Image (cartoon, rainbow, N blue to C red; front, side, top):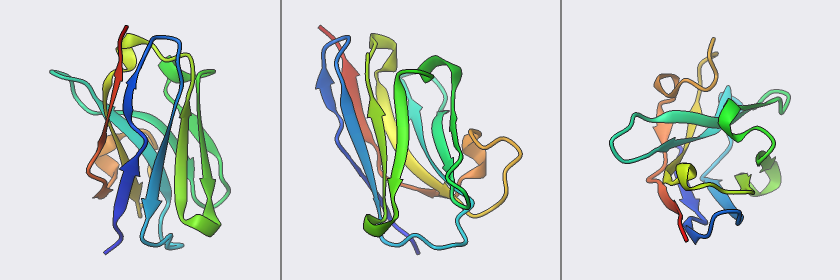
Length: 125
C-alpha cells in the first residue's frame, strides 16, 4: 500500500508563497496521476492541480492558473506544489492523492483512491 505524506503548509500573508511537498513511499508505474486537492471549511473537496504520470502533463483548476506550479522529482518520489501570490480564498487543507485508473476528469477527487493526511494552508494578514 503506497503512503503519501504532505508537508509545507502554514500561515502566510496575502501575496506570499508556500511550497507543499508530497512524499510517496514509492512511485509505482501503475499510477495514472498524482495531484493536489483542497478543502475549505464548509466546502467540498476540489482538485487544484494534477500531473499525469506517463508524460508529466500538468493540469490546473482555473482559479490557480498562473499562480501555482506542480512538479515532480521521480528520484525522490516527491511531488511539489509551488504556490505564489496566495489569496485568502486559497485557505484550506491541502491533500495529495494518487490514482491508478485512467480518469476522464483528472481533477475530479472521486477518481483518487490513495490520499495523504493533509496539510493546513492559511492565508491571512
